[in-house]
Amino acid sequence: SMQDAASIGGDGSADAVLSQLQVLLESFPRLKDPALLEPQPEDAASMAEGVISAFQLGWTVWKNDVKRLLEAAESQQTSAEMAQVVAVARLLNGDDEAIAEATGGSWHGVLIARLLLQQPTRPRWEVAALLPADGSHDPSVRAILALLRDDPFCAVECLREGYGDGWLVAHLWDLLWRAGVVNLNMPNRCLDSRQFFMLQYSKALGQC
Image 1 (cartoon, rainbow, N blue to C red):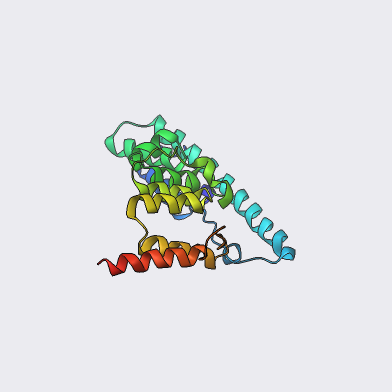
Image 2: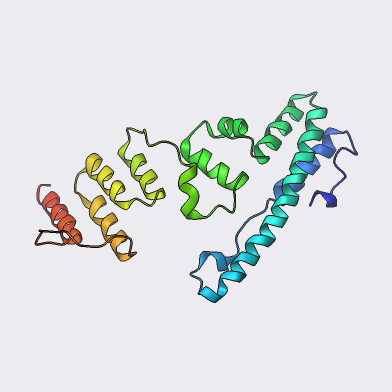
């Protein structure tokens, strides 16, 4: 916490503000408990909730410290160095304009920044609400967005459109099938979907 550093606003020097910024960067909250990354039995759900609650408490304290640093830096923005501190503090505070400037507006940069700096406890299945409209002409980008929206069928179609029925589609579908995300049923077909894509891949190899 910033309480361990000099009180924000108590020392007007640039060195004090830079010191406080360093403390904030070093104490950036990270939701990294290994228990959250592993399959949990139902009776362990309360433990995960406890971990997230504790993180949210620390996150709130840290964000309040960031806001105080930003106010202190803005009040003494008289040099290029202090202007840079203000820019970093605005980014850490999750300011949308600061995020856009820092990421160059790239959708993946904006997504990561918003998850890290605005909504670090947003569940994976709610990430779709943060994604941009699917207007890209790049089939690989459309495929990634589709996967993030939990739409594996759209992702495969985007890759087929861009790259044909080669190794990428065959291996992606095999991976999705092994993960239990898709089934193999293909009505009115002699082959299941995995066999179909593998056959198409084999045909592509035969044409090389």
